[in-house]
Length: 396
Ligand SMILES: Cc1cc2nc3c(=O)[nH]c(=O)nc-3n(C[C@H](O)[C@H](O)[C@H](O)COP(=O)(O)OP(=O)(O)OC[C@H]3O[C@@H](n4cnc5c(N)ncnc54)[C@H](O)[C@@H]3O)c2cc1C
Image 1 (cartoon, helix red, strand yellow):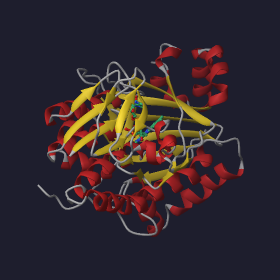
Image 2 (cartoon, rainbow, N blue to C red; image 1 turned 45 degrees about the horizontal axis):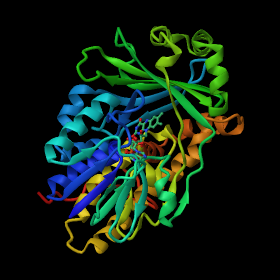
Image 3 (cartoon, rainbow, N blue to C red; image 1 turned 180 degrees about the vertical axis):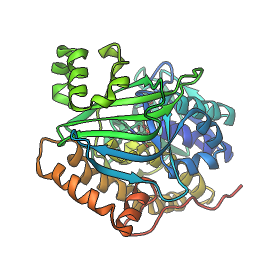
């Protein structure tokens, strides 16, 4: 088939690799003049690592990234309120966004996908044999299948006639990458909470492409409406607030040199029904963006790509797309709903929900069944109503 992909993020790149390797002719359209990742780093879960393994990229990812074995959430008294571990034998991988981007980008080029930069898709014509139209009026297509991977803030999905809900979360986060000079934060995603109005974390992310230094991503939660005030107050105020709550983070916080080193991330709670109209399919954050609380978005995007290539081996494309949607919905819906429910426990002005977090999530850890549910949730494999996602059989 001739397949068009809008967006060169995790979903677009992974789909381009899997589909080009399956023998399709793939064109990727990216609005930026230079393809680049945004933000500091992310946590790949065992589910996403299984996809990278299938794409032959896991070893390279592990050589860049840093293993993460648990999440350790504390309150300022030092009490651990959240100790989340992966199921036995599994681990996550913190990775610099630039490193993941580079891996996927190189593999995409090697697989033969054509990348069209500086091509912001303004509209999609003829949904049965779609054509993309750029902001500058350039037309490309028609495609046998067009995949919208334009991310959580995608505007194109609104024109497809699907049922779309994508409210912006009122809270976002500032992110930056810093060196972890003595390796004091290795192995664990550390988080510190003061109720849910103050939250910050440190995630080991390994090294950036071309670098040797071990890095961590530092993140600071804030209400989007407070961003300008925070910037005006300046970096020193932010650092002092962080250190007042979490003095042990000093070796990392003191490394941040300029407020401009932060990128501001905002996120949406996206749901879309169905995932396609005619021959336009929506995947990745554009279809199921969540808050990053559970660290699953990039993993879900990688899985979308793998599952799509798997189902498209069926020669009946409509049947393949219907099977893809049936297969993805129970998995994606679990994380969408869990993330919607959990986010106010970590980012809100409330009192009750952070109390419930410190009481029940901690309590759940003491029970083997609770540990199992929380561990498999973290590993990125849970589905609704029950059951676990597993990679499909290889068709190589
Ligand atoms: C602060 C933060 C922390 C996160 N941490 C984690 C984590 O630890 N683990 C995890 O798994 N996930 C995490 N995520 C989520 C993860 O980043 C996303 O789920 C993932 O990047 C989604 O990939 P995507 O390809 O669907 O979208 P994106 O990565 O957003 O890519 C969309 C691409 O489409 C392009 N585009 C948009 N519109 C157009 C257009 N009209 N024409 C052409 N191109 C267009 C954009 O420029 C972009 O390149 C985090 C997210 C945030 C915000």
